[in-house]
Image (cartoon, rainbow, N blue to C red; front, side):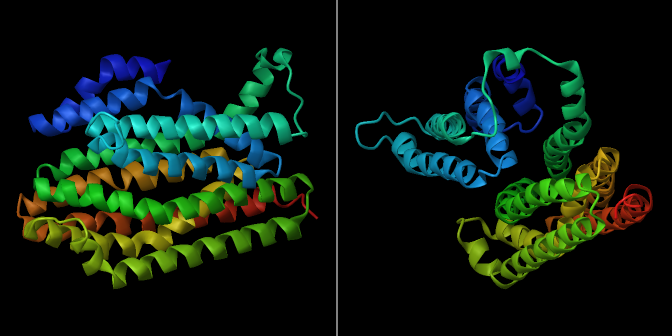
Length: 350
């Protein structure tokens, strides 16, 4: 309901705060409004995706997710350009392709859950709210919710800050953000695996299993982030040339890739630690790290660096230093939290 109301009444104001370009404004409002009003697909897919993952059926949640993504990819050109008899809809077509793909994922996840998830008894009476259960869910889930919201807040704030540098900087960061998500999603997936495995071990009071789950979870996350950094550093030029950017934007984008990617290893540490904190019933620590790495250690320094750049695109690289600095400082705080949690949470484990 909140997404629906925002799509109807809030999309225009939100986009107006981000750009004064009329063409971009019109396209962005159309896209956002469709995605928000028709959001039940992604909302309910998220519910059944986690139900499948929580009961060991993550393969089926992956199938559902990939099916929706493939549907989206297939429908994009058909609905954007009006192929195979489908009306040409431009950016609205991209939005409709997105929400249709989300609905496909939701329907498949729902079917898999109802047919295959024998660990959960599905009865209408279980829909009746239990405040005790709701409180337990939110005590663990609220930090993750805020962390997700902070990603949007950070992007929103950075767009406003970068607009004072140049439109090329805004474009460059927008493209880089999409590219880095391919790498970050892998880290998020590992975090979602670290959390239940560590939580199960913690529930068993097995210190050895908790340590192993944390050790290997962190190791695999760092390997993925290191590989991502290496790929982006090596292939910066080909990636930059793939988007048909202007010379100015290409230069700014290349600088963003080379500098921000240096923060990936520390970002991976923070993401893994956040999963571990949640597993060890330390959601407050996870929340603090989210606020630091996606707000306090990013937006104020970026604003200060943007003032130093003062609209000079040649100096845009100074703003990108915000990301390595923010992730390194956040990782230091995460290590301190982890030392405290080891002393207080794991002392009763055998």
